[in-house]
Structure formats: structure tokens, C-alpha cells
Length: 191
Image (cartoon, rainbow, N blue to C red; front, side, top):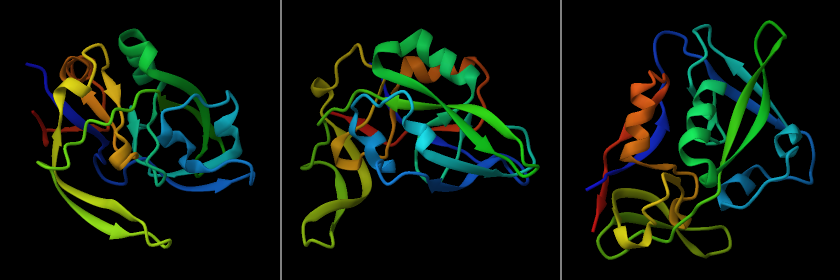
């Protein structure tokens, strides 16, 4: 049986490289559009300016305040080789302290599955400003396995759109490739 993990960026070492701030350059775009598993325009990420801090080497998966999957070219190549139909890859420029920019990749996940099992998961509901209830925290993730196609390796769920999930074969490929700056959280139960 395969496993599903949460994929998160991990801070490594002293003064780790991370995207620490951003600026929206246009009122036409909303940074949350990336969470809806829909195609994005090729120039989508040009509507944002990102700044990085940290003196350590740039990891393959980068911490950022937007919860966007931002990664190295090397990481994006592994994804393209193993789950091309699940993603879009976009260029994103990041400004660093010395005034120069570096080119990284943003991953737009194209798959989202309503597989969250509300009866078996443990979560907290909160009220939005409009009074509508939403899941604000998940303490125990339980997914209905039959709602996740076996051919998909990387996906989101509508219940917590910023979370990224990865199937075990792809996680193992990333580990074997020596990727840095990422962690696989083994807290998803399949039923």
C-alpha cells in the first residue's frame, strides 16, 4: 500500500535561505489563485515581487510566507519527469540582499481531490468575517483513499487548500535525488 505525506519546506542550518516578504504589483491578481488547482497564465508570478533572506545555500524547496510551492530548477525537473500532468511550472524571480535576483520555479498543482474524511479526521472550525464556518486547523488528517486517483502523485484538497500532498513513490524519488529544504510529514491516514 502506498502512503500519502504532507510536503512542507524545512528550514535547515543557521540563517537559512527563505523568501521572507512579497509585494503584489497589480490589483488584478490575488496570491491565493494558486490554491485552486486551475491553470495559471504564464506571466502570473510576474505580478509579485519576492524578497529572500538568509545566507545559506538556496535549498531545493523554499520556505515562503505565501505557502506557494517554490523550488529549484533541479526539483522542478524531477517533478516534470514524474508527475508532469499534475503540475504547471512557472518562472519566479526572487530578490536577494545584495540587490541581485535569482531564478526559481513556482509549482502550480493542477489536481485537487475532495478526499478529506470529515467523520474520522480531527479538526477545528472557525468563523470567517462573513460568518461562514471553515476548517482553520487539522489535528488528524484522514483521507478516503478511493477518492485519490492512483495515477496522481502531487495534489491539494479543498478543505485546506494551502497544504501539498505527495504520494510515497514520488517522495522516495525526491529523497533519493538528495533534495534539500523539504520534509515529508507522515500524518495522513488512508481509509
